[in-house]
Length: 241
Image (cartoon, rainbow, N blue to C red; front, side, top):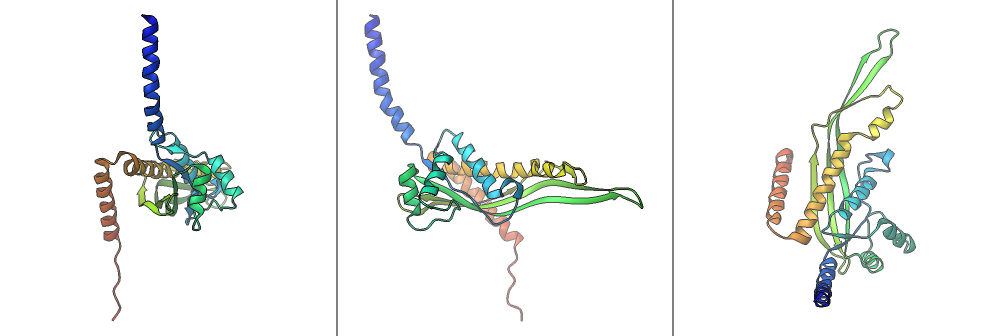
């Protein structure tokens, strides 16, 4: 009796294994390329492009919906093939990276804006006293253009502009203190803006590449609202007469 039960269990596991393997292989395989930076922000961390790239790769790897090419493997391929890890690809580069890493899609983009909401105040000083210079950060605005390239065709399969700002993370730094530089680097508002944008990217990719359900309409509504807001804040000047 026990042997029959064990045999049945083995057969059941054997039948289940192909379906599990199929489900695993069905996950989109992504390679996160270095995001370009047009802002010059976060220079002490290597630039905001590097910060977004590293954080995005880590967050995607933690999401069960995707399989991610390891950064070390991707970097080795880029160096071996003399392909710049800049986010700028020449025709054929995408397919080459895909063949060598197994990536089906290359995730890349450009950070187009990063603007901390800061205020600097100078107090004290007098004739002989030392002035206190305090910088307050109340949040940060970040915008980026996302592109996802299909390595089999070299075409952009998905593209989206993501922008938003953080608030409620007010931090103050005394610029006259010796550790002011370190505190500015570790600014919570800036970090929250980056992480918020990264999570928005991953939610969008999971929606359009994996789920493909009601989330599509939700993201379309969000995109329409973003465009409407941009139109309201921008006035196109006509010809001068």
